[in-house]
Length: 200
Image (tube, rainbow, N blue to C red; front, side, top):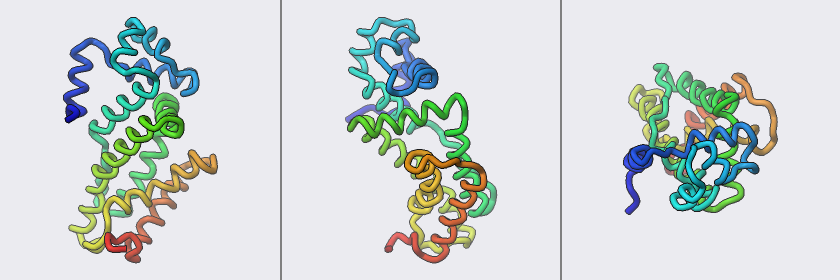
């Protein structure tokens, strides 16, 4: 059985080397295609054999960073209404990719998943963790009587953020607050119509 991500994070930090800052910095500066084990090692001030021994290759670095990130807290919105929460969630995703520091790193993770099976599995697990955390938005809405108890919380979350990811990584169209709000509105309308029920 693999260790808990939080436990692994502590073990890595206890060993004096967390690859994520160096990995993120190199990606932000030069892009995913330029990410190398040697570059991460140099930025971290450790010998490249240390990185190879622990992570094996670039895909291992990305996969482990995603696994650790998936176990970290996610600022799930709580505005008091399902409409406000879904809008805030969609904007949170859009703003994250627009951030000049974090955006290139997040984009690189998605890019890595398109090129490597291990990275793809890690990204899948990361999103599952995020969907699980964000499902609290829908659970609260059901408790308030805003949505039917039949609704699938994770599907509502997916529907709210999917248009943002589509524009970012498929159509390469601009993403702003209006786009995020429209995505959230579409998800809410589908949820209220029963299209996102667990039995559908």
